[in-house]
Length: 292
Image (cartoon, rainbow, N blue to C red; front, side):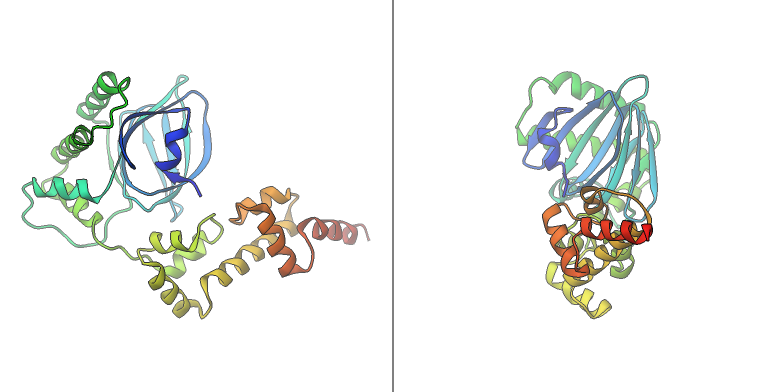
């Protein structure tokens, strides 16, 4: 499972500008396209796209398109597939990852009198914002070579960005959005699981993404399906594997990834227990039957 920002810290295409644990400011730069990169966002993130274009598909199969100069705010908990597309040879973005503590600090110093408790949107997108673009470029220019681990400066810079975005939104709108991020959010288990059973997620991930503790998720799942989530996931994934094998030529490794298994050996064992044959044996048997 690719956790963001954790996986980015060792990525050669990513520069750490400031960092305190998983609260950080990162610069991502690349010169060749990255297509269908999967990840799970474990902290809230604001992306300032400086060059290139980005397409993000979320768990509801909605595609968010971001152009150079635009700003995207994504709450933590999104499982997404993204395309990073350089324009004129370059893709560059500045990424601000932060937690609820910084949101609460911002709200405590803001003039917030009343906030809505309606469901939080999956994202908040701003158009081309020259002031935020200038802020991002100056931050890179001043701090890129330092790789600071000063918690106070890091928080101040993220708070400054929140302040800039707050000034762009209608009165109360941005504060409402931030406040709602800190509230529990439950998703419909059946809808979410049908759309995401083939993702390489653990039970803990599904619980978090549906806004539940692990114990509550197991209880709600059993109530919805009258089966444990582990057994249901295994059956759904192996059913999909059989459907794929019966309709196309595919390697065992790719097949495992297509149905949510990152451990190939475990997939082969599960498949054999379910079907009575290994994937390769099943493929050979299918070929023999087709010849006959």
